[in-house]
Length: 248
Ligand SMILES: C[S@@+](CC[C@H](N)C(=O)[O-])C[C@H]1O[C@@H](n2cnc3c(N)ncnc32)[C@H](O)[C@@H]1O
Image 1 (cartoon, rainbow, N blue to C red):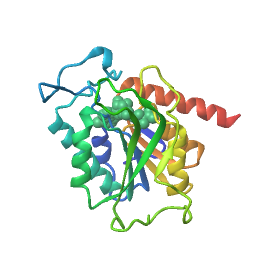
Image 2: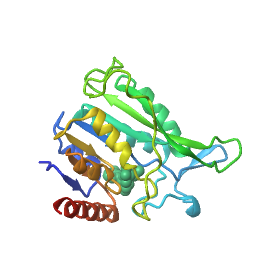
Image 3: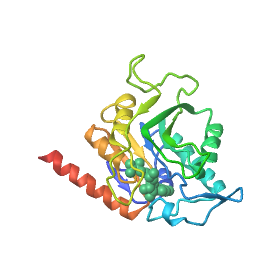
């Protein structure tokens, strides 16, 4: 049984295994980007952490071999599409995610509704020459009910009011140990345009809990999963601070 307004400290696939078909209205999430997978001599080279470049996740290395990373997305996405009508899957093209993103777009082309480009305004300088500076992230939008059309079945916006490039500055760092947090504006834009008050939103990779915080502020119900104990504790702290603010 899954409770609302609760974050589960576990692998999201475990939470998903207890969730019924079509039991949430929307998924908003950002999976790990496989940030630390490198290429050496023209081949992916996992299991080796470049400390000074690595993302600071305390719980995992974020460098799965590419086949395992492909499988990870495929398993998670299939489950997300079983439980939710619409899925906003935010991911950045980096060395370790590039192949998987392109594969996911192909494998799930029948449910892929749209690709929204999140423009952060400032590019991350590339580490090497002949590499594009990365200023954007992608939001792959999947829908199960009406994917053939460009028209969203569950959306609130009027004709001509919402573009496919979202200019939103990178989020404030809310935790020194988590580099990749959602800006609140990104979540609120999705909630405002694609959900209604009281609807249920699931984030399988909660990180610092931004999805939960914005859901609370905008009167949506949330469910979350997070594997890292440190992040899980941090989410509980953030939620309790918000509860105290709301009471005063
Ligand atoms: C890119 S971050 C998400 C950041 C989040 N959007 C925020 O605003 O803070 C990905 C998170 O997923 C967590 N994670 C990785 N694998 C997981 C899994 N299988 N199940 C649940 N959480 C996982 C990591 O610990 C990390 O905090």
